[in-house]
Length: 347
Image: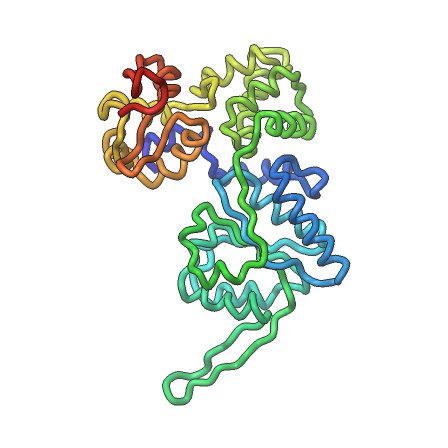
């Protein structure tokens, strides 16, 4: 990881290895506890209830959207609501067909298999999934050449819940085998306030409405980040205050971490600043911006751009990225005159 990406770690939507246990402690275990994503949750509630009434598996589910929004959590909720087991893995971890075979053949009936980053499955592994998803069977090829034979091995019925941040990278044959598609979007400040209040209660931390709202405002619409910021502010309040996570101490703690009032960190501001200072506000390609700030284009596209697009600080055009008037003002820079004297994008 580059220095710039590491600098942005506190607001990264990717989970760090040391956060796994912390996240498991805070994850909701039922639809009743789950906050946000109301349309997706309502649809999944119906699918799960119907499957339970028929004593069947839930249809295979594809969850897509930016990282940190609750895809893994939803997979666990589905397993809990079905009173079955969750078996979790990821696309990069399944390197060979034998790895997938080992997982599939050890599933119990109605288990939920969760594959994160499913778009990173190899072609060989993906093709093994097709009959497993359609017919709950896998095909073994024995011998080679003219003596080759195919044996079908029956699997116990299961539900595949797959998650991806890049649905466009999935092959059409794999996409078509999912019966349920749900897009997860960024959370509102109100939803994040409810999440951080619940998390503080589980952790035994004292938090007032002002502190909860301030953390939610700076969490980039992402539950994973709101819980990470809560940990940082809890520590700061304990060392520099009386332990109460109030508005003033929260602002002080997050300002020191480089997280501003709109949830932008140093990397976000360097990204926007490069477009403004070096390219006149755009349009400019992501590769050029990455080279300017000495970072990786892929990291910027995944870690930085989605939230800036969401809040309207950045716009993608056929010619490249443009910075909006609001972003200029947030950075304390004078925006150039817009078309016809109006605000917005600059021509």
